[in-house]
Image (cartoon, rainbow, N blue to C red; front, side, top):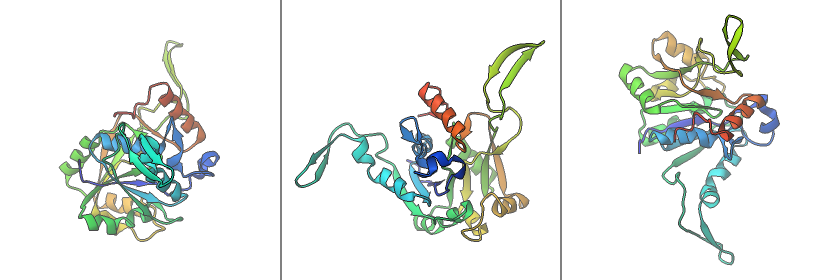
Length: 263
């Protein structure tokens, strides 16, 4: 088991997905039969990273309850009604070796502010490097190779660049004849911030307070200093900003085409 912690931003309100986030935090929206946060964590766990730090905020109690009751809901148990004693039977689950820190990072904190609040806990465990991503996107990023790349360049931060999904369907045309039609696939040109960061502890010193957007001044400063390197990912990546994107993820999962499901 790798002892490098994984920070996942789980505290935003997800206003563009209000149909779902009015009732639950965005990472708890279901993709198939499990919440989005579970899919993200399974990817990291597949590569041996099982120490998680969840940055909670909006409706964070739902995430706490989900993991607090995880054994109860995903294991065979015997309950003695009188004493309320619970005995775990055979048939456990594959997440028993996960370690999850549930950290309140504020109701209104921005992304940078949430990360900065992890500093105390990182220092407690002596972590000089940590992984991080958003709680609303999945990918088939090879986390092991991402960390290897980060260590190879010796800079303070690595961000994973991905191709964004296209806003329009893509036509493959040969002399006016459509050879192939793909409904809103990922583009093959252009790069955006796809999350899946590797960061040194010193990066948190560039974050001023709870109101700081990590994607603003901190990343800009790292870039200006030559301390931000890019790991290019040409594989699958999909965020969940809108209800339509949620439908896309569910359609892929339910049809057995969930490319992020590397485990």
